[in-house]
Image (cartoon, rainbow, N blue to C red; front, side):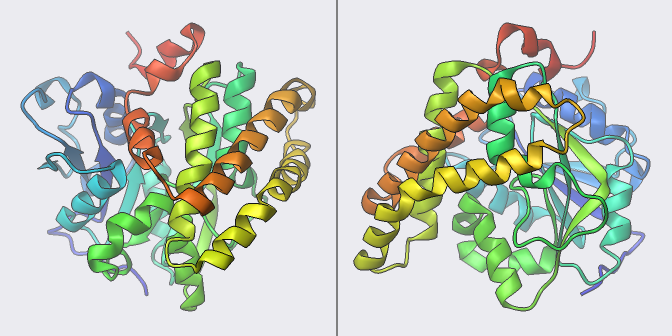
Length: 328
């Protein structure tokens, strides 16, 4: 399924969900406007309302174009992404975040890789605020498996909210797309079951800002685990959900072992010793959330996660907050 490029249309549609103000998305726009192939990139910006959006303050002149999609009061950011995907025009759609900043060659590398038959391709993920122990712990839990790659790899799933897809593959989910994007790994597993190929692309990367405040990190891990388990088990029978809930306490030790193995590859071995206690505690809370999700469903966890998905500076320690905004 190679991507066909038409010169009269963008080659890449970047889906970005915003809170509705300009400042929170400005840094991501600056990185997108600095892409080497920016004239082939359109940004589809999904916001609840465009009333407070002033794009004249955002660097967009060199991009192929910017489309603003008003989503109204959708339940979650995943639903907003689905609306934006449907409004996109390029054969390749990339998901971006207001707290994830791709270097200048990111789009070019993704587009080149999409000339092959891979249906989903993601960059490596790097920690944008690495001086915080909690940032490292949250980063490793969410993106540790995709921080290193010596060469092209075809993993079972890819990092959420930061990957790219052939647009027709996403549209194939129809009305289910919003629900599938709630836990993006479900899409990756489904694509693999259909015989499609996924790629983690070495060389391409993005810098991701991570929670670095204690209370917010605790809430993030519990609600994240609960929402994932609920989405994963939505169609399961009650006995199967109960079995997975009982098995949930065994998951954190396994994830901790795998994460430690991954972290040993970093040149700064001291990071492992500093982050290990926080990592173990947050993984345990994540596992508790999973158990709750299998038994009780998502509850309000998906709504809470959507509320904290935007304006990441609210969940950064003071020393990290300047990283969320454009340089003065």
